[in-house]
Image (tube, rainbow, N blue to C red; front, side, top):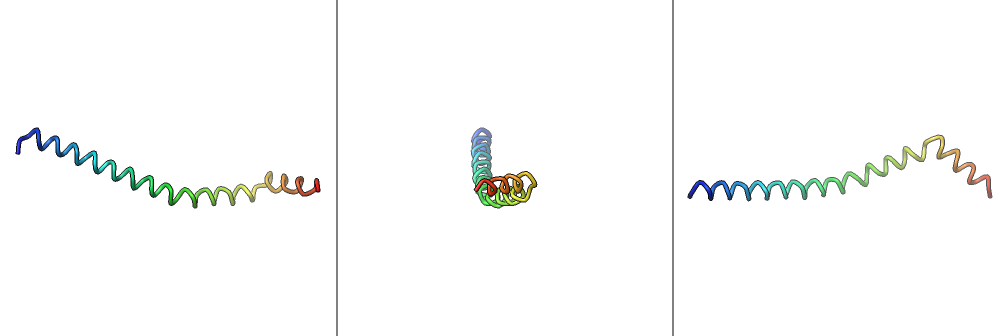
Amino acid sequence: MGFGLKVGLSFIGLLVVLFLLELASIGLFGFFEVRRENVRREIFEETKSYVHGKIQDLAKY
């Protein structure tokens, strides 16, 4: 096997590994992002400004 062929196959192998790692990170992002957004929403709903705004909205009715 020639040196050029080894370099070419190594480069292709590296690209495949990087592609698979990128797919894994997208999958993990989708898995953890939902939970992270739920925590952010829960924290926001407990803030003073959110509670005060809801009280004002309820007072209108």
